Length: 231
Image (cartoon, rainbow, N blue to C red; front, top):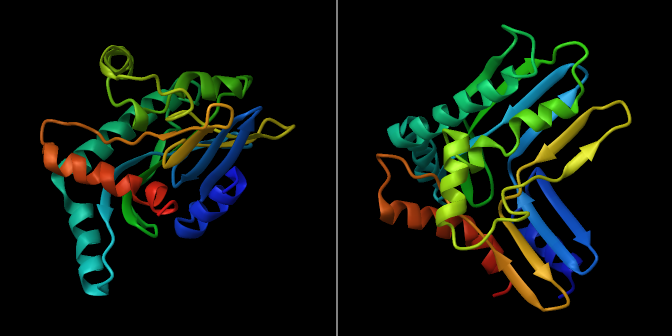
C-alpha cells in the first residue's frame, strides 16, 4: 500500500479525533491520535491530557463495567491527576493568575479499541503574551514525559534505546490570528520511503502501583490497530 492508503486504512479501523498525515520529503507519519495537546481560541487555552487506558469489550454489559473500573482505578487516577497537575503548572506560566481551571477530571471517553481517562485543563492567557509562549512553556506535553518533567526527560535520554523524534511530539495548525490546535503524536506509524524502514513506538506510565504484566498488555493494546492494518 501507498502511505496515504495506509493512513486511510488505519483511520477506517481506528478513527481518531486528532488523526494526522504528515510528509517531509521521503518521510511519512501516519497518525491516529486520540489526544489533544493544546488549543488556543482567542485568549483561552485548553489542554486534554490522557492518562489511563482500558480495553473495549464486545459485550455491552462488560464494556460498561470496564469503563467503571477504569474511572475508579486508583493507579490510573493517580497517573491522571499527576499529569493534570503538571499541565496546570505549565499553563500557569503564561496565563492570568487564578484563571487555571480543571474543567473535567477523570472523564472516560470511548474509542474503537480502548476507553481513555481524559482530563481537561483551561486558562486565560495574560494580555501581551505571545501565543508561542503557550507552546514554549508546555512542550513537551506532560502526558508523554511524566513528572517531574525536567528530571524525567533526563531519564528518558539516558535509558530509552532510541530517540523518539516525531513520536510523542505534536502536529497541528496555527491560524493567522494566532489561534492554534495541536495533537499528541501517539498511535502512529513512521515510514522512510527511501530506506523502506517502517516503525512505531508505544508505551505507558510507570508508577509505584504499576504491574509489569499489565503495562505490557496496555502497550500491546495501543499497538493493536497499527499492526492489524497489515494483517
